[in-house]
Amino acid sequence: MRNHLRFLAVFIPLILFARYMLFGDADEFRRFYGALWNYGLPLVFLNFAVLAVVFGLAFTNRINLRS
Image 1 (cartoon, helix red, strand yellow):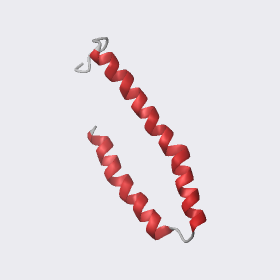
Image 2: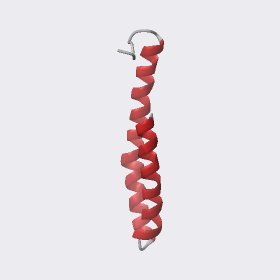
Image 3: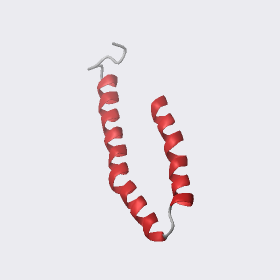
Image 4: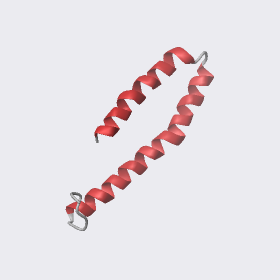
């Protein structure tokens, strides 16, 4: 969980910096957020799905997270 928080602590300011400093026009904004929507959001959902399976198995005692 700590690694995810570190990732967000770095990723969110980079998005804001890119939004306000690097792009010159609205088309570049649309391309950037379009790529983020198409490639970043599915990774977030995949990560949540994997965590849900792992926690589900741990809570039903099918795996032991301590080992």
